Image (tube, rainbow, N blue to C red; front, side, top):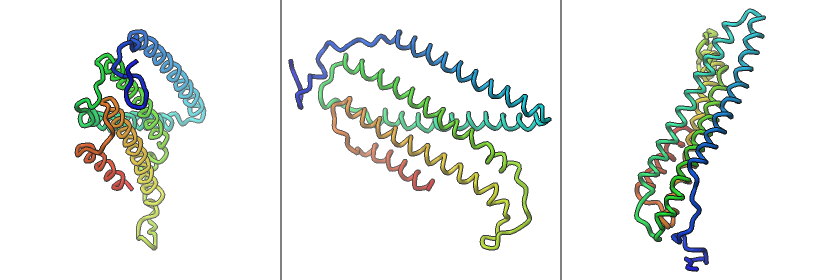
Length: 226
């Protein structure tokens, strides 16, 4: 059997297993659908229970306000992280691909590229929901900032109203920590995808000019957030 360096079988050799994409998509879509239905049912049950509890106390309007802001923050956090990570992954596809260094058969690439893309989509979707949930859980800080009122008492050191430290500063910390986490995770995903692209070309990962600029911009963004 032909082999390349390191004694591993030639990656271009035919005989790779064919991926049953229709079956994978069918099972994956079905599991995702039923998983989504289950999570939605659990969430709706929690919402219904809270509505009953707040209703008995006469504070239905309060819970409606909380619910609206939680949903808004969830969607905003999910979409923002999805946009950030998707844009960076798109840049890796643009700057990380190039000529083949070690010949790899089209059969092999047809096996690996869709598998990589499917994995990327799943990772982005899951991470986006996690960051969306993290944003949604910060509704007390957001509502406190929106409905804040001045205390009319100035801090003796910074000459700021005490309300700034109670309502505004915590929101700054929440936004900073969320953005920092999002950029760090997106940077790790970006570096991983560059490594995968270079590996599919049979090339050793190197900091080409476009890759260096891309990573440098992400690093500068991290420093700016800090």
